[in-house]
Length: 293
Image 1 (cartoon, helix red, strand yellow):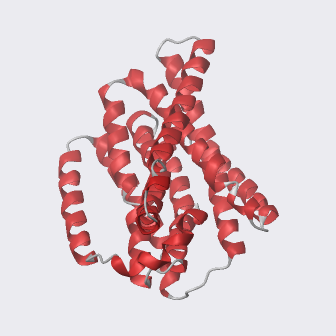
Image 2 (image 1 turned 90 degrees about the vertical axis):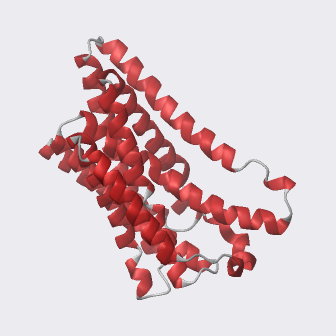
């Protein structure tokens, strides 16, 4: 993910954003969304959970306000821990409840496995499709156009990274026990703290100002409450969609973890610490989920 943004430094001065206007538009938009979702408890809870996860992403950008550098080792350990948390959440908060939802809907044990397995594949395939669409056409552009486009592709990739997490929160609040949904949201929020920090640090390293880097890092997490509302609304329409939605969210998260988050430390020199942190995050999330569900 970092290699995609190495060439964008020459175009940074051409990108000017009035963050006060952006903040005002977002505030009004989320106020309207909150007013609309207040009529459904499940959708309101999903919005609240998504905003909590987005707040964790914003919290992760705060160290950038006090330091311009963040060691690669610490960043890889944070991402490894977050990956372990999300890996456990995919299994214990999404796939297992998805199997139970399919059985409760009348499916046999083998059919429940087929339904959830197919939905996991579909969720992963959708993320792959969205990523492949984002990379089409770079070779046909000038160097400056391609560089500028990669800046926004990076931002969109971060948003795509958060999309399945938001969907998972919404699907959980829309169809599983509130305690289990809260545990999943907590796990996603833990994962989002280092993610927000790494996004902001990466943007600073390629020429963004500190203000722009922090603002873009915060903005990257706001897709989660939107996706959470969409997920909860989808499940509220029909309980038959619940196992498909749970499995799809798990598949999307598993793809992002396997394709982007977990391999990153292995491209550098901190694979072992990151792997140890991954196991620690997995055990912590497993304990939280099984103890509180």
